[in-house]
Length: 310
Length: 310
Image (cartoon, rainbow over all chains, first blue to last red; front, side):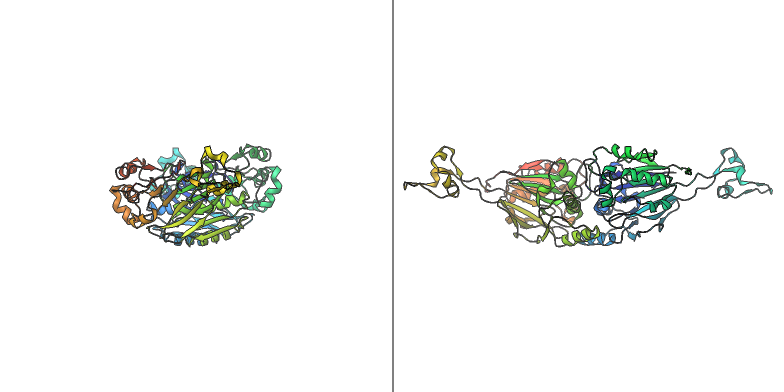
């Protein structure tokens, strides 16, 4: 089952040719979640051939325009396209007023239920849950209250051993997948471990943008399979990073290393970097499993067994 | 001196691949004016290699998202780029709150003075004036109050006859251009018409989007050199046009014909038309001097002597 992220925008506040502001699309077991929604997100979604009406939830990290200005246009398009399904939006407390004021101004009465919930600026608050994933908050350190999002896949069922399938009656399969021993009509009991393998480990993804270097995050993102962390600047601009509450690529890599994550994905590149490989080069020596998030690219989130540092 | 319009977006509310929502850039004597500012306008301006800080005024016709959602991002970019010059914005009464709420939410204190003025929903109110142009309002007929804009170039000075330049002392040239006779130190008087040609006629441009067929506009746009009129639908969709308070291409052409304008530019094409030539074909039999507004294309506004209909 899918657990993947498509980066729709990798730029920072100032738009640079070819880079769009922050937006990501998560596909978790064929349910679509949008994380941040900068201006132009609907154009990017269209390029990625996404049916907007499949998006069930939107998570907005903070109220800087490069993270939310595409939302009104997306809502309007969903409305005009005849969406009827509920849309859940999680974001800062101010988001509701920003949306309401604009719906009022345009005298738009959305055809679909729009539920706007506050994503509090703190760690570990559960926001959303469906049969496949649970989403909770991360407290980031930016100029205005900014909330990251932690996606944890729910535990999978045990996997049936193919060669033993014939021995397990259909009615009993679900119970066996859930870990029960098999009780046959003749009284025989077959131990679960003879019939199943351990389940695949649940996967996890943390979205951390925008934030200064924040080691207080480590306990909350420890061991995630994929960490997206902003990397707005190179080390040469560390002063500017601290002043604007952004991170350098090296700081992002330090967080990834110290949280023992599986892989690190960098994004939110300042428009001053025409080529973002300078950022990658600063991160790799600290954390080798680092990648740049190129726009439109999809990254599969794979299970990762954290290696304890010695 | 320039008087030209570049169409940055020609789409309607639903974005279609390759068509952006409404936005136009006017260059009037090297001063830049933006008319409407749909999502993605800053990307289009960048593609057209426009220095954002040269834009001095913005006119917003109404509060449907496809006409204003790009404004916050543009303001933010101007701010981040260090703009210090005042920006004048004219739009519906609700625009101020929409901007203020978002500046507050992002805790942005713009470095440049932003002056937001209401463009009333009525005909003939003068909004803006500089040495070259005067801009006034047009009352359009749409689902929500919508205001068009009429740009009238100010009268030019008389043109000096090249072969007589040697006879006119430098100190007297401005007076002669203003129509005065030439008084020489020896008492000679040379009649102005011997020294000058009539001035070039001032040019004019009317922006009418979005609107239903509104013949009550005719008196206000009569004889303009270039009329931009929305043409959302073909005649087959005339019912839908009336219902949504939009125009068909034929109706736009009827307005152009009956207002005896110089040329007609069509835009705001519904996303259902992959190829907008179907709209052009319906307009041409009614008003032959019709063009489609292709995105990124610049149209020079030329003086036009209206021909009285017989």
